[in-house]
Length: 349
Image 1 (cartoon, rainbow, N blue to C red):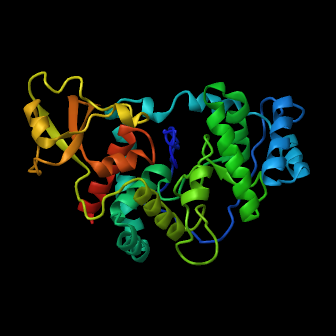
Image 2: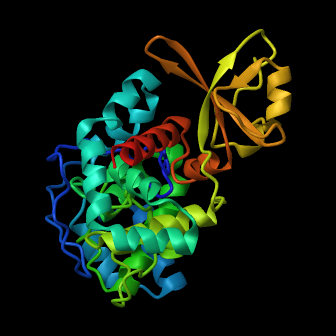
Image 3: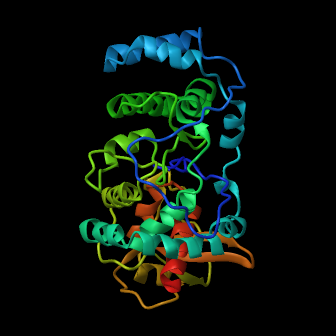
């Protein structure tokens, strides 16, 4: 996602349907798209779209005729609005975990690591991010490339930029970045496919993250996150490194035990607002009745996250690398799914 909305950057989670092992992903420099029919209000002739075209031409020198043709061939997609309003991150942890801690994703992750061992080792050496964490992100995002999205990125971003007022400013900037990216990479605006929120490729980067953090990790002259697992591996590692990943730190999250009321009011939940998060040392957490399930330096700082498990509240002490994962998708549920999937893959290997 990059950054997920979430939620992915924003919740950018896709409904996956694939085999237990990842498909063979052929590296090539361009995505292949199959445009889907437009079903909503046409973009052509709308005053706000015309103003946007003029702005893109003035600011970036993008050909106005090409933009007008792209908008004329596209229309708003009502189903995208519906998907944005019911993201997977709205589920409780007990249901969310079942989506991602599956045999397909664990077994597929082991196979992905085997098939891409050299690139994962090189990424870990350069950026300090373990291969199982990179693999788990690709597993959560796209089931190792099996589901990179079915929506034309241009149409998805235009829908959200012009017909989703709640986050229109954000998606207008992402549409701008996508158009610049497509121009830089020589892509037809309507060619690439992605998620309903406009995230792209195996790594599900949003356009702004693609432009800023995607890298050509295999040295072929292209930053290709659609079909090149090496570029996706290096780009995810680069993203996490830029988000504060701590090299050689095995701690991401530890289960905890709660006693007394001292911890209440100090739980971190809104990862979209970093200043709202409560960081305390392990010694301070112990004084509040929070005990980590394993030995850890009393001076280390952590966040307390509580999730709704099948048998009740699941408390975790979460460290700097957990926070770095939330910069990829601003959700504690997402970061915990990545964490636990990475652990399951490492244990299976």
